[in-house]
Length: 365
Image (cartoon, rainbow, N blue to C red; front, side, top):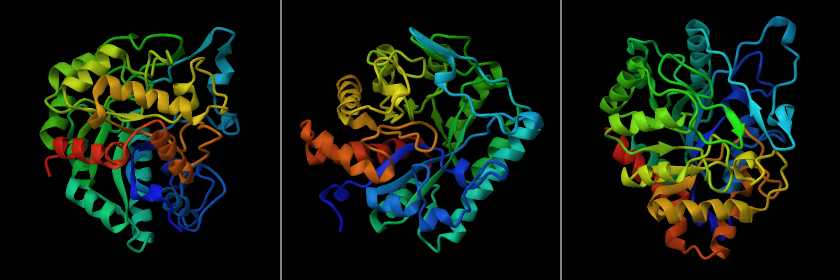
């Protein structure tokens, strides 16, 4: 039985589900289990239905190439670098283009395979009209999003091909340097003012994205790069999965000045559900109450306005609150916002209408 909260379908600014299902040698779950359901990770179709998840940006993220002798090495986490006063995770090294392109195409093909296997239950959308139609008819909408521009060449020919394939959202960097810009490392406590701004190639990339109608995601970009994009771009400034620096002084979170710029551009911020982006101590413990997430939403609404705030879960790419657990827990967050005083009209904006608005302003079709 549907709960009242399913009156508010959720559009999500960011998830890393493809890493679980579409990358040979790293994926541990057959693609079919996305449709039948699993007990692992945060996102599959049955749990998405339970949580009112209508779709969002499905990230193509290229992990660092592992050396053969390190294939079984445990992935790094913030905890590996924690001290009593915080942590500083070193930046990953730049990726080689051929490896990045091959891996990104593999993940992209995985998204299209899931669409084909879904028998109409899932659709890769390329226009805001398509997205809105999916929300209305209950089809899971997937936006092809690249988290890091390593697969894109300096001459931007790859960008044009990827756009024709369906690319509609692009993060210029993940937290490592590219030929276009510098990523922001995970440092707590620290401001995002780390490193230089866009390269000349990065400036051309921004202009090309504006021309094509590809949304630029600022979430992993350092502050100098953020301000360069703000000067060059004629599109709304969007951070798909970042939080409030005043409440959690992690480099990946947004300062008040950045939030002011996002408001001025009529842009968008998607709340990252990762506990290290929410907690005042920046740590990775999952004992985070939903009220902490509400507190970040409250601050974002105060700074950028009710029309410019949504969700950017980072499902399958981070650790989330025990109270939320996974995508099926989205109604709990909606209910926590309702108890905090948000009206039905405001909840519709936060859950889905704001994302549709900013996509319409950014995409050309």
